[in-house]
Image 1 (tube, rainbow, N blue to C red):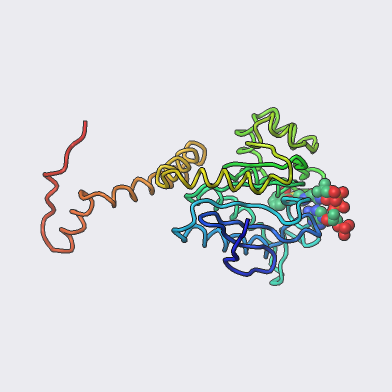
Image 2: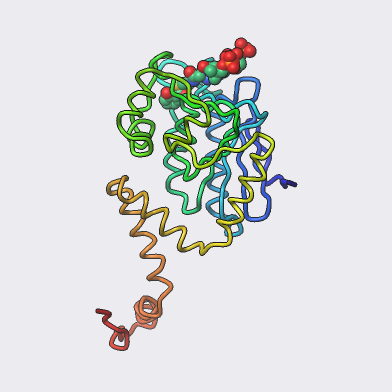
Length: 270
Ligand code: 2NE
């Protein structure tokens, strides 16, 4: 598969293949652990994916075939967060998690090797996960003095159930790809050499579907779980659809033409 670079970054690769964008953490020497800069770059890439109308689906992955992501880079963990060049401690991966959930396009985690700690949470918040047979999943927070009580706990529990989510966090065990499939944590398991082609095939299927329908579905799935923020997303999509209608345009036109709007011709559906 010939990926074309979209933009150069220091700690991620960002490329596209037709309507598919791929964001790949490029720190294989530490199993793709993230720093504040990695996350900042991923956030920028996600923003580009959101804005670009030719991109319909985003793949999140890690370079090297041995890890998707091993969470926050412990070597830059300081007093109150992960510390970048500006010496400010941050947990900006939480912003990235929200962005993955709210971008109105499907996000697919393509997992080879380790998806651990904050890296595990990243795949959990993606819409779909396709795993290679060498994938290993788990949380480590209680081992290393950390935890993610947001999506990392509550959304994980929605995905695998309360008992299993508590087991994952309280025991910090690691689970292979087959176990992950059995607990509904991933959508499909394939041999490592078929991981990318399978992911791209799934993405191509998605790209053939109605983008507005996918957008509405993603925000509908989120709405039930995300409270006011989830309702806001769904309602924002309703506004988008309404703006496409002649009825809404009559309101705007009347205002611009300094006249009373005439909504009488629009049906009052049962
Ligand atoms: C992933 C795991 C189990 C793999 O083990 P193994 O034996 O296959 O590899 P190894 O030798 O541990 O790792 C290879 C190199 O990568 C570094 C290691 O230190 C090692 O470096 P060298 O010794 O070769 O120099 N490395 C791996 N993960 C790293 C990390 N996260 N930070 C810095 N260096 C890392 C094993 O490597 C492992 O358990 N890794 C740590 C996983 C972890 O605890 N992650 C942080 C969880 S907390 C978090 O992510 C978080 C949160 O809880 C809340 C908010 C935000 C973030």
